Image (cartoon, rainbow, N blue to C red; front, side, top):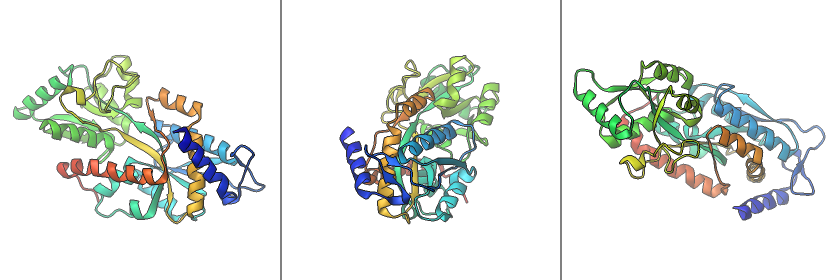
Length: 335
């Protein structure tokens, strides 16, 4: 990977003065007089883990470029509002979009009339981090393992109580889809209870009103540690360093199970290729910052290795294929 990063920086050095910036003596960008700030549009509210990552990356990208990068929150509609704003902006590379699984993978599969085409309109410049998920239950639910949860859910679905309800961060959210993936592979019926955001869903699970949830590790970890939630499994292929005692879903009878998701940075396809390459190289340097990776670790998030633009495009295509079957099986469609 170091060789990949050096190649990216060499490309940036060869490109030169895109966006009114020059490159300093060590391949780092130097500010030019009158350079305007760049904007990083974030499709989520301020203050959450996703926003913290976006702001930390914006700060470090600004250092690499030698000019400010300002995070601009445009929450709503499963990142569609922020995406439309990014596509409507001038195609000069000064407007970036925090784009991940929802924007580039899930929305194109869920929405019948999406106001953008992820492949035609957007180019992925970086994947900043993976987002591990964890299956959690209220401790009042008599299940200490995924096998016990599966047996309990199967029995309840066949009895007078009906299917076990599970909370999510919203219809079509990756936390919803991860639970659907588990239910499909286990041959279960569960009842989906969507909420607007993780905090509201967690309140319901903590109260025992909705006893089950698949949540991001960053949101659930404090409650797992203080005993108010019981962690049954993580959805990543390997165990997590922050929860080493919690087995994966794959270990518990579901080989190959992987329901993690990710965040990255994209721009309009109308941005000139040379500018895309330059931003791509600068983002790789920003993501290599030790402080940024420490922040990810503290949030329970997984850093991602640098990838070429072609590798990023292939990654998005493969991830969309992975989720397509889950969404078809669930029958979820959105307008």
